[in-house]
Image (cartoon, rainbow, N blue to C red; front, side):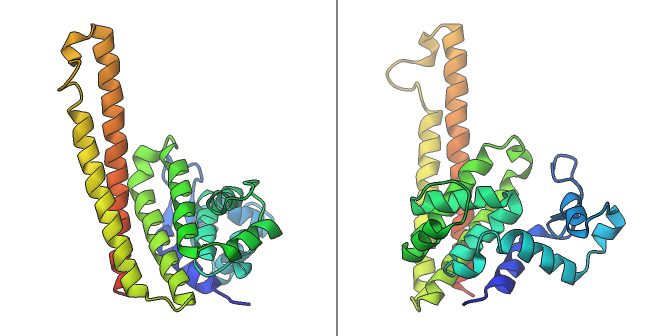
Length: 254
């Protein structure tokens, strides 16, 4: 049995940072990714913010292993897919993380890491499965009401997790890691350029055919809102592809 727990934990902790208590974060007070509610459940009693800030390494590892790594069956997943399941479990909950992986694998998305899901994970092309799971995760995050506050950071995190997970998957299969990662970076850069063109095209809507000026006031308002929404989507997609390209470039130099 492989043991990638420490590797995956280190990557997740690199994104979680230290102390946080953002008023818009529904998790509330958090230390190294552990919320005060999670720490209280682990201790079996109420805990203070001071206790949370002073959480020991032993408690931290126990919480992550018991609360996230074991439920997603990290030791039983192929390298790369373990990180692609573990990190979102920490960030968004175990059930959601498992469902995103199941969507990527094309099995019933019930949020339970059972034998069917594990068998599909073992049989799937790991790079494609990692990328699809991360894409499903991004689709969920973009729909959250807190996207405007945390979206840029989430995009960077998911892009980084994807690139690291792909490197792990390639290395486990003795594939040409640097070359493959550089190719993925070029693909992401190409998609970013395509999204830039699409955003510009959406911005020019009405230049041909029916002009916005020919529409009634209510029609102009609706059309303008629709155009702005499309532009925002393409800009968001472009930003994420840029983050992916950067993450893949960084991993190709590891």
